[in-house]
Image 1 (cartoon, rainbow, N blue to C red):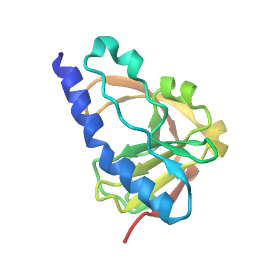
Image 2: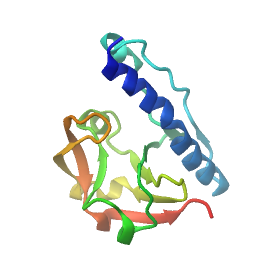
Image 3: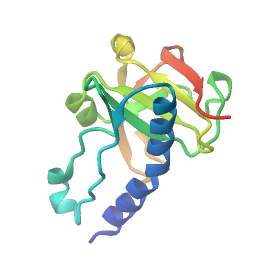
Image 4: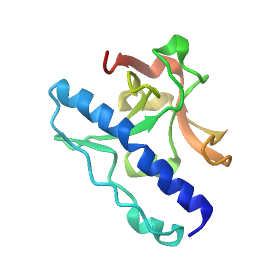
Length: 152
């Protein structure tokens, strides 16, 4: 197994607390949802057969993609970036109407981007802090984000 794939596996496993925190918040608000099991590809060569169906699936079929941010924030004023990064184009193509939720490192605050703002989303390139690679992502301006406290 390549070191890059091993690091990917560790990041994927490390993303579970963020997904679980968002799922708990949504359940507390009365949403019925499913958190699909994460099955990790044993190697990069077969990863295309392990693409997930979204991080959280609401009872009405809507998909939520959760991004755990490695920094703390409480809202727009403390958001550490100039824009909200959503996900790679491949994810956007699989889930064109996904809801994107980025949650702070301390799992207390979240930025929510609804598909109603999709007309303002754009493609950009960025250096992925996890891999060091330059990658294409969808992003949106910060005025498209709804800032929420997830837990006290």
